[in-house]
Image (cartoon, rainbow, N blue to C red; front, side, top):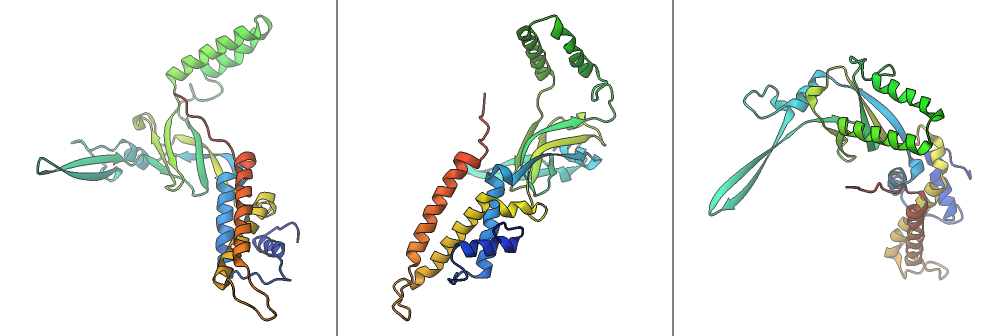
Amino acid sequence: MAQPASRSDLINYAKRQLGAPVLEINVADEQVEDILDDSIQYFQERHFDGVERTYLKYKLTDADIKRGTANLGENTTNAAGITTMTATTNINGSAIEFDWSENSNYLQVPPEVIGVYKIFHYDGTNTATNNMFSVKYQLFLNDIYYWGSTEILTYAMTRRYLEDINFLLTTEKQIRFNQRMDRLYLDIDWQAVNEGDFIIMECFRALNPADFPRVWNDSFLKRYFTANLKRQWGQNLLKFQGVKLPGGIELNGRQIYDDANLDLEIIREQMSNTYEVPPLDMIG
């Protein structure tokens, strides 16, 4: 069908685009599955339609806090929260060792999460500062009163000043994340959090085609997978270059391979210029 709705539909669609069933596509089923998995991974990691921006919440436990506050001092109570590494060198003919340690101050996140934007800390036990009845919320809510008695520019400048003060007092939480590790490191004061507090993570989660079948019909994914399948087909035929078939037909795997590489170059350029979310600038 022209609009694939499953994994097998997309595979059959790509083969038809390459000439099947009129032509035999000389690609093994195992190769097709690998190529499709690679194409989906590329789509999820680069295409703005391959991910969804969502919020995940996690309830901190006592074990999390102990790992975050573990240290190598004399009063260490939870050595399991420490990772130790040793570096050795030779100085003036003597072997010197340098012992480094790292806290296990991270939370394991689901493998579907490919990027973390920011986190929010919600202390459910402190209702004076973390809900809509807090002083901060009410102050900003009542700023609306000034809309009828001041200019917009003055209001904006005053609001910006208050935001700057708020930034100095409550800065963004420092986090580190690498999707290949599935670890969200929280470089915070772990002694300032309590068991039962919630961490809200604003993140980008890869779309699972099994849950959202319309992914299979994405125009970019169809073209990209077909081009990758075409390149594998040409690569498989390279070993038969110059071999004559009955009737004088000669397989031209090199041409198929080169055409596929050209298609992929155009598709990837389109990805960078059209579909890919630009990276955030580093300021400061």
